[in-house]
Image (cartoon, rainbow, N blue to C red; front, side, top):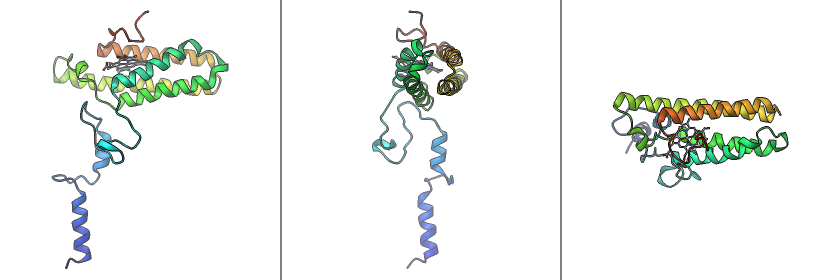
Length: 182
Ligand code: HEM
């Protein structure tokens, strides 16, 4: 019969991923952004997704941002639309965070000349989305506090940061690009 100590050691060993001595595989996964077409396994829902989370692509996340921006731009200075504007800003933040956690789409990555350019593109992608997200957080604060002039300026800054990101990645040529002159 196994002693309690041996049984405890055996069950601890079975928790570690084979071939690794990393005691916190969940944390390690959380730090590694998903690769396109290869999702990190997380407990909860089907196919390793947390319960309630649906599959979404960078394109889908961008559509969320684009749709919200389209509604937000003409009414950002309208204090009577404060609550609606806060909801739209939250939607933009949501799209931004979702995109930031995903990999750069393969067709975009394919435009990079070599490994070094691919690595730079991945770093730029996350940094640019983070920069947009920071503006959107300040924008939320300004709208919540009724600072409409500051809000207008912050939304413009978020749009400029988004535009810069699209230019850096070379994704500005689509007809759906919100930064293309209409
Ligand atoms: C205010 C900020 C932004 C808005 C409103 C926005 C919106 C959009 C929209 C509407 C599209 C076209 C989606 C479609 O095909 O229907 C798009 C595409 C894309 N955006 Fe953004 N974007 C923003 C910022 C950024 C940033 C900072 C990055 C990263 C640097 C980025 C990366 C991309 C990529 C990679 C695509 C191509 C997605 C694909 O077709 O697979 N975007 N964006």
